[in-house]
Amino acid sequence: MVGVVACGSVSSIKALWETRIKKIQQEEEEQRSRKARGGPTGRLGVGFWEDRAVLARLKQKLVTEDGRLILRIEHEEWKVLPGCLVQLNQVQEWQIHRTGLQKIPPFISSFQNLLVLDLSRNGIAEIPKQIGSLTRLRELLLSYNRVHDVPEELSGCQSLERLELAMNRDLSQLPDQLMNLKNLQHLDLSMNQFTCMPDCVVALPALEWLDMGGNQLEHLPEDIHRMENLHTLWLQRNQLERLPDNITRMAQLDTLVLSSNRLRDIPPLMEGMSNLRFVNFRDNPLTLDVTLPCRATKREDEEGEDDDEEDDREMFGREFMQMYIQESRKRAYAVLNIHCVKQPNDDDSSQ
Image (cartoon, rainbow, N blue to C red; front, side, top):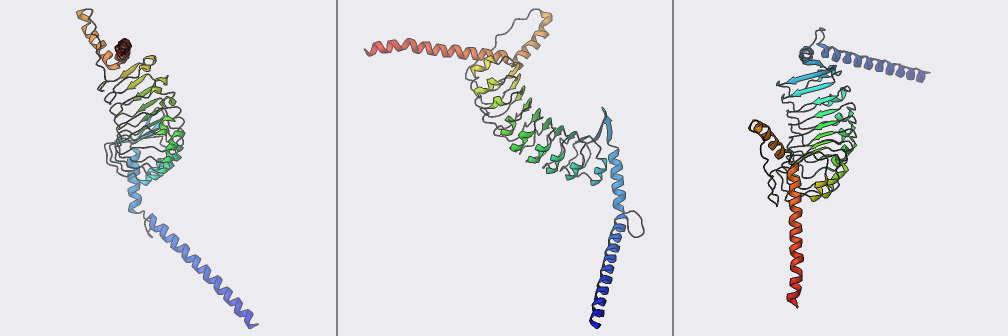
């Protein structure tokens, strides 16, 4: 009987002790909560009022244009965006320029209504993986930053139509997963360190506009014609020495800029690119020296109009391309004829 009493006493003591521990834990939790709100006196802390002031300041940066709520900050110092910004997660567009912003906050994933994220001309070095959760995002503009790596999670932005990463200097590659951006139409990778066109770029099914000028491109992919919808291609200031023959199979291409490369010839098949409206071969060491004939002015009062026309001829370069190909073909025929004429004479002399 004594043993039973002892056992019951131990159980009671254990239950009482557990109750006290639980109560102490609850009191500690309440104390931490009071401290976060401003201490035991119930007064709100300094941090609360600072967040409130920052939030009020951010609300002053909100504007509405075309029915879209925009957060616009320019020429102010915001190296880090405050956490209280998540309270404005109904914003549909960020326009934050020249603020010295150093990183995109991980809480960017809270902005599920975001359509445009324009953070160009800042100091951003990294794109967070959380950006992949922005399934409604249409435009991501990060030109003139310090981005050196693009996460594969960006491929989760299935609605993305425009991606600009110009002038990030150390950027030299893109993850293959970006080929899954089925709606991407506009891609700017100019003024970076690409030595070749990324495979994922060639595989983008909806791409219409591509700028890879100012890189270190040494060659173009042989399957460049896979970009069936591409109509504008900027490749100025690279190291290209030749063009792949399949470039002539790009039926939609109407603008091609190749100035300041190392091209020595123009593929003859380009003569058949009837949709090519604008082309520029300026500042290339082309083998043939071809000069367009001058057009006589009609009247003195039309001189300005003729000057504009002459500028257009030089700028577009299509007429130059056609004349270069024709001259190249003529010279090839001439060399072939000379060879054919000399061949019988060589045979006679040998007899």
